[in-house]
Amino acid sequence: QDLAVVERAFSFSCAKPDARLAGLALWFDCVFAARDADATHTEAAALGKRARDADTAADVVVLSTAPGAASTHWKQTTILLGGFFEVAEGEELAMSVRLEQDAENPRTYALSIQT
Image (cartoon, rainbow, N blue to C red):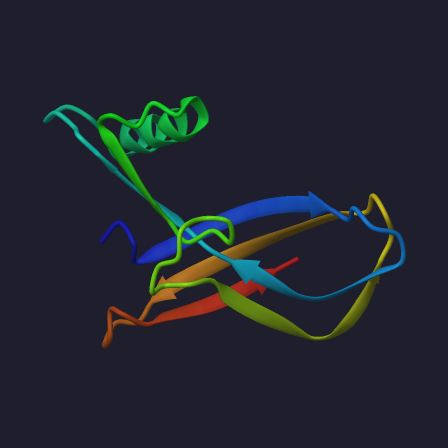
């Protein structure tokens, strides 16, 4: 149920002059943390972030599909935007990604992007 709808707003800025944006790449981190009965998902996620940042993952395992992480069978998702869009160096790009689980096949998600 926690994964029926996943939404994330984010922004980034262009680091190169005269760039053209043609697509996005998406990936995820999944945090598996030892929790007591009173711990929440937010606490577990915060634990995972601290473990990655501080490199103290004794009670936390992070499965990452990020490009620099060890390879998994999930890989990354590439979304082509249907054209090439000029982006100026330093230009801030903000968008939101929404994944909604299919009612008939819970392994399938509809993906939408808003700018």
